[in-house]
Length: 68
Image 1 (cartoon, rainbow, N blue to C red):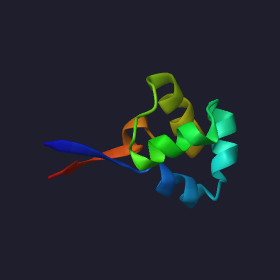
Image 2 (image 1 turned 60 degrees about the vertical axis):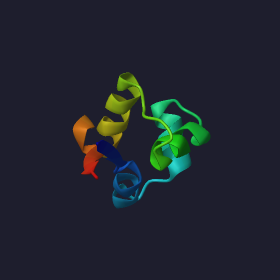
Image 3 (image 1 turned 180 degrees about the horizontal axis):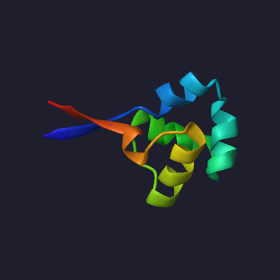
């Protein structure tokens, strides 16, 4: 089984951004961003593209496979 491990929090920290700012730019609530960071759910594709652009990375770098 493949599990997707979230890299979003690490990428946000590397850029020195505040999570509230990231949520505002991407157009989601801080709670929604928190859900992505915790792995409760994943961003829709349009939000993933905005997030990747803000974090200056590729969309596929937001998550990585964490095989069990």
